[in-house]
Image (tube, rainbow, N blue to C red):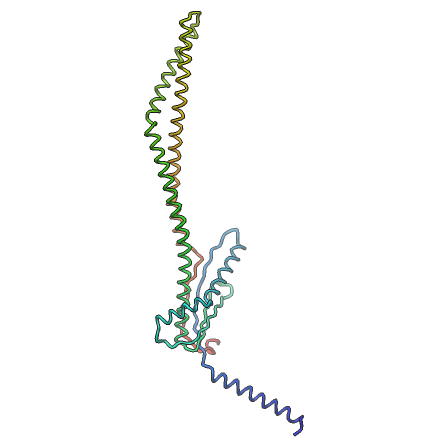
Length: 288
């Protein structure tokens, strides 16, 4: 046989062998099934900072996809299935996540050779993902609340310290200082009037001059006492104002607590299950 005739024959035989191998491979491989589920996500927009919001949103969506497809989440899902369905026939399952264009909906696709196990495994993936998100959220809330509660304790201590200082100042000097200031005020008024009268009737009388000297000294002493009592009264006023400020700050903490709860309850960066895993269908049929 000539070489020119043998080449087409070899090509034909090679093609037949290739087709045969492909057919055998397709026949020998177990059929694949797919089950689908859907997640829906939300994100918070910061007005006036749309570019930054869009960037954060894309990071958020990317985190969803990466987490659902992660080895760790698949491991947890496998453990859940083994625990809840110990008699279920298992198979290797691959997980893929596709985000619907222009939306916050994610289609989660599970592919495996055992249809029932594929569907159950996908539901386990969904449940484990939601549980993971809840754990992360609770940890974040717990950290915020822990810091807030410590601040409440600090504000309470500040208020109690300020109130104690106010009570001590009022108990020790409050009433006496007020009474003493009234008495000294009346005394100063009387002395000043007497001195003014003497000055108006000034003469060379030595007795009157001596009396003026005495009045001047007494007026000076009374004035110094009034200054000291004014300082005491000012301290009492200061401690009272500090106590009121501390009390107001402490009471405002409870308003902040309400804001925290409202923030947690209305938090929009959430992920929820839109559709649970559907019945597994053959791969060729699901791809139509």
